[in-house]
Length: 462
Image (tube, rainbow, N blue to C red):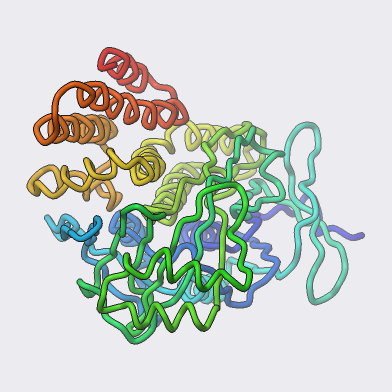
């Protein structure tokens, strides 16, 4: 075993060149930092997650000067959502005030290769294809990593003033730097619909009803991604009867103009699954290291908020590190990391709460209907809700107000449309269900005074 010299540390060592890690490397390099990135596989990946970038994520790319990352990959602009509920639908457009950007749909692998191409061209970034086997810890501080070089087949040490662990949802080092409470709440099954139309071009489609929810959005000029949720801790069984099951369960829910493409995709059987995680951030502050991206925090991908959260984290951490005059000063580095952990929720909490909150709503028949009827009222009911979904509005109180107002509106509809008696009890249950969904999500975010006041208000409601 050899090392690169503990006295010749690089400024930052990044474990993982996924979306978060590669973008962080690009941004720190712009600040003049000396960066090493270790990634186990630099080949283009084929995944079904991270293919919808909400406007809030586009906005963060703009702030970092990296909008070129979506160039030349057949990325499709996305202008809003069509909410489909049983036989009805309602179109909601993203806010477009003051030049706010649209979102984009694309193949994740192509997008990531654009970012990697950028960092590979930077003179102050060294990219190593290899597998990190351990974090080097000395005197309770992380000082670097040990890795196996893929090309050379030898083990090396590399040292850094700051080690950034961003090795994705299946992180090998999460438990070293956090107290994770990861939960798999289901699996997405991914299909590609090719050469077809959907009710609204360049829009996402959320399909709800008496079936698991689906999201559909464009990823190239001739393909739409379909993600079907399968609830539970185990993936769907892709046996011989699975194709028949998909057609029986979902063909009536697929918009009519896309059904032939759905039949073809099912018949081809090129199914891919990926676990949907819920992972509240619970970092351990350890000198010389920081946890970032899906290794730190995950939410349900139903609302496509993952990359928006990642870019918020990348920009916030970068800005903190940019204020460090001397990367050799562990106290300054530690202060920047501490501030990141203490403030990152300001950019991600509404994304997290909405993602897991809406997931709870679409599986509750009464709340599912209430949600559709609520946003179908238009005006602020749709616009403000969509601004939070887009990652442009981060007002947690506004999110909570709409969430509870939605449940209350659902009770009004139930009382006005059905006979009295048991309806009153059902209506109260609807509000309690809504509070039961949102309360643990508030608790899982940073427990500031605002959260405590909101929880007190929720208790008064029920």
